[in-house]
Length: 360
Ligand SMILES: [Zn+2]
Image (tube, rainbow, N blue to C red; front, side):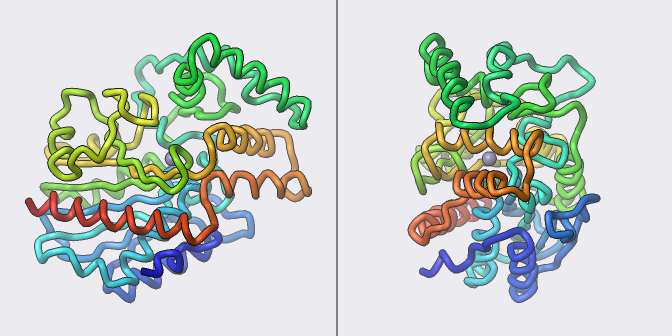
């Protein structure tokens, strides 16, 4: 299997190949244009390809680019699913909906966040209510995002983070940094102050295209957490949620759940499945994130902090800016055939199990 051939090297190529592959497979395309542009003036959009009956009761959904730059991974899988002919595996009563680059701005600009520095997977909270607090992040905010970025600053702030980990444990540090925060708009893992464009667009897509569905399976492609190339199926549900029973029926014990403490991810707030549920009341929704490892956690976090500094204080066109962009790309996309093959094989297995689950 030549899975590695399906992956693109930048957003415009990924978008073009997705549209071409979808068209060749006979899928119907709908585009949701983004108001801003990419780094080379290119148009940005979340693109939706629908294959199968319009009124299908069962729909398999794949989602790429929730975290912008992580979109290389999911985009490759989506192109491959159409181009390899595997999309034909779905039965007559099932449709397949691929949502390409739901955060196109982050994908094009090689950022994990949206155009407003928002972590889309922390943005699905009720902004009319009081927002979750994160005192651990407050304590670390300055060390995580210092105004200068050089070897001395990196070493000094690393010391602060290590001290925090010694006091609260490595998982305490991970929770403080990654659970999400709603106070530091210039920080990392910022959940925003209102629903961002990608949030509203995801709900619009789900409401418009899935209104007639009864059973929906979602696979949301992510990278940057866990061992290199390993694909962890993460179900972000409460320990007593009915969806966990279905996930177990479909995927066996080969899944994790942050609320059960079995995942490499912590219990984050405001993840996108909340928005999917709000958009599809009464629909049976079985959603997992497929999270692939790239580099060691500390290197991934360092790349995120560097990128945050670059967009706040640095110059994208400088040599330093270019080096940081290389660093962040590497942290979320391993441009190596062995990694891509692992992504592809695990994605196929997961999508096939989801199709079987939907049919069962
Ligand atoms: Zn992600």
